[in-house]
Image: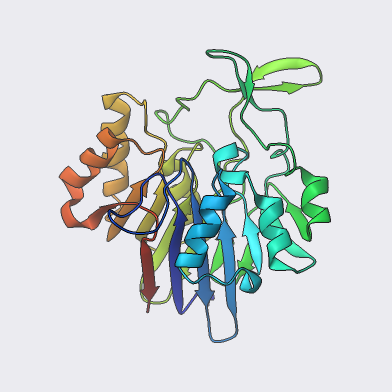
Amino acid sequence: MMEKLDSLRILTLAENTAPFGGSLLGQHGLSFLIEGKSEQATLQVIMDVGQDYDALCNNMEKLNVDVGQIDAVVLSHCHYDHTSGVAALLTQTKKRGVPVIAHPHIFRAHFINTPVLRHVGIMEGNNMQSLVAAGGQPFLTRDPLPLMPGLTTTGEVPRITSFEESVLKVFTINEGNVFRDSMPDDISLVACIKGRGLVVITGCSHAGIINIIKQAFSLYPGEELHVVIGGLHLEGAGSERITKTVEELCSFRPDLVSAGHCTGFDAQVAFYNVLGDRFVPLSAGAEFIISK
């Protein structure tokens, strides 16, 4: 029998928006604290760190997050608004050998040229050497990587759908040649909860949220989709793409979708119009506890 988690806690440490009147700070970026529990073990994972580490630290302090308890870091993809400050976080844990899980291409050249040439990937001070010096131990793989029974990365996500082409015009360099970057490093987390089903946690869903969900189903055959949380990168997408994505995702009958960051207002409205109270806009401090 496939092993599953007893419970999963997801705490939003950084997001574009913050609650009105509170002390949490918003930033263009995303970060989650994810805690998986089973009878055998408890694991605390930070997924992404936003782009402003001072703002992240403020929120971690206000949310009573003990950085010293972090067991691993997952980087969903290379973009600066998800990876800036990883080395600082690792240093703050005061640990050595903290697993840093990512795709092997995450440190590549990654840039835009509109309106001018600008690097938008891993920034200076957060390259592999810096992460190792700060106490990290890179686990760079294209394959799904289980973090504990019932919690795994998706690994590199196969692009199956016909309508989820990236809306970003980003580029990379390989052997001296410039190519359109297909974002192969985009990975997500999947948890399987006893009595609940699958929870999919995304950074930006550059691989396409439907492709990601189908990958989750392939990792846990026979399980139903319970919750989707994260960025869906439908900002700037056309109405046809948004409509098709909403229809496909909702056909899986999730009990909750909480999307923000790069999802875009039009897509949030479209999800709310279909799901009603089963859709919640994401914000800093949002907490989700899922148990059997």
